[in-house]
Image (cartoon, rainbow, N blue to C red):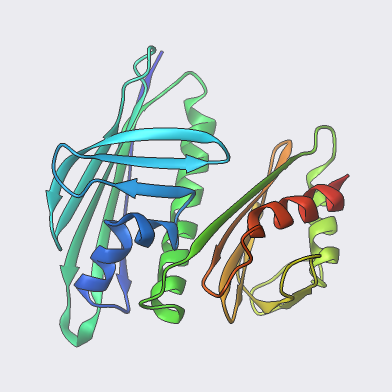
Length: 245
């Protein structure tokens, strides 16, 4: 049985409407703050394709008003589930921009857990968008994704392992300094700019690094703005796998 849902948020961003539009309505822009690798056909009736960890999801562009409004809708699953996204951009005095996001659709039988995860995730994603527009304006991020299954290991143990590997104290708090030297990658030196029960994000001079612990898996979503090695994703996957082995 499906259940309807809707999540609506608004945030004021320190960027022009043109900059915000570039971030939410182009493939490279979405790559720089959201999840996965994205391709957008910029027109009503076009498609938005997101690929994350080998999983590919396609959505139809249902509204495309350059600089103002973008809306997409995923295909409907056999059980009726789908997701729709709407972004509304409005300029403000002083060079700032209000972005309104509406995420709606139909969820499946486990809709409460799904809804809670989405509700918790959106403030974090909008925070990452703000970090991108504030600290890396005009640059395009290279998305990096890694995942490690960890069945049977308690969440606090996983959190502690991640914290140790990044030279972070427990509990992980905003403002703490992180340091790691992953093999084959530039050293990570930065500051924790987001921390909640599921994830924390570290901003470095050339990247936004997210470490997400949820259920029986640990995920990493990074956005690299420097000259990242060609095998950066594979190197981060090796680091995560070895850490949690």
